[in-house]
Image (cartoon, rainbow, N blue to C red; front, side):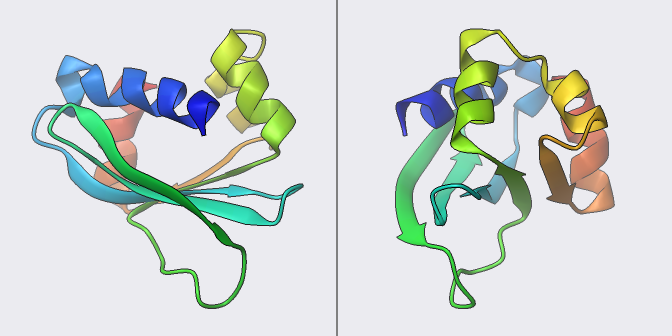
Length: 105
């Protein structure tokens, strides 16, 4: 949770994220958990983990990765662009959100 808060906190505090208010999820495939929260007002709020399954609501911005890759991203050992390009991290969102996130990542 701390690693996710760190990486998303940097994203939320970026000036390019001003006015962004979106639900988000991060599916951690090796833990069978999904962390849900809200990105807005320069911060990440309401982060909580739920078991992965069909009942998990679909968020506006969805990340999928292993917990090891999340920690590596947070520690600076793995660059988001490289992880995304190689398929280690998946990012799903609407077209407008993807264009806006491109500036942030």
